[in-house]
Amino acid sequence: METEALKNENYRAGFVGLIGLPNSGKSTLMNALVGEKVSIVSDKPQTTRRRQVGLLSTKEYQAVFVDAPGLISAKKGLHEFLHQEALDVIRDSDVLICVLNIDEKEPKRLMEIVELAKESGKPYMVVIHKTDLPLLHRPQILRNDLESLGVPIVSGSSSTKGDQVELKEKILDVLPSLIPNSPAPLFLEDLYTPSTVKELTVEVIREKCFELIHQEVPFGIAVRPLLFDEGSPKITRIFCEILVSKENHVSIVVGRKAALIKEIGMKARKEIEKLVGTKVFLDLKVSAYKNWDRSSHVMKELGYVQPQH
Image (tube, rainbow, N blue to C red; front, side):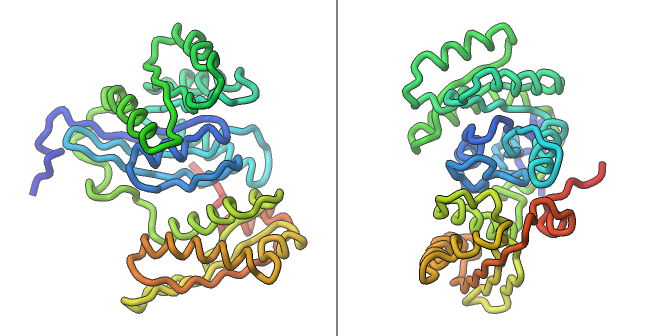
């Protein structure tokens, strides 16, 4: 049976890469565009590690949004992976959205993001983000710097539901015309992400770690799934290991009388139950693996290794 998309000769579909600096608000923006939580969100930099994919499907187009890690320069370990992931998103996308946060401490770095999009040769647009912040002149200064490029520019914030709706409308007024024509959608139209429940579960647990651990630990945290048992229709049993890069970080993540790890588990479990549609038994253990973020073996196991092109 033909879908509406297949009947539409002017149908469009393509990959839309969201690129920006760490903490630019790309993940919050992507969740707003998709209308579902796909990317985890934190006020800490380098929260996004692997590219996250979210889908927006209409009768006229399908936008496959790809949330890239914040662009950083690095030559080894996890930082190198994040840097390469971001560059690969630029290379693999059909369209780019440059998310420029006006609170960036080094504003010249924002233009470097735009330059990367320009050099790619792909169609792109610019979102001047976080305009709700009390930096009144920054958005206009940025617009002045961008005007000569002749690309679509929108501005706004995604800090509240109302802001998200307004900014989404501005972006979607422009974006479809940049997406290439396609004979059919790239993914099933009723999906909002191609990620598996297992992948989303790991990200939820990592998000709660970022949210609740306030010392200098989160970047050295990774989550390794040990067992994902969906054998019972009434309860899903999930066992995961939280890896930290230093021995003394174990007690920080566990907390006094195991209070912190219990809170991480409780908050994660509530969100995971919405994903799997059943009650969840979640068991979390914390282990130290010194400098795991520089170990090729562990990095590969966690999926933080670039495939060979």
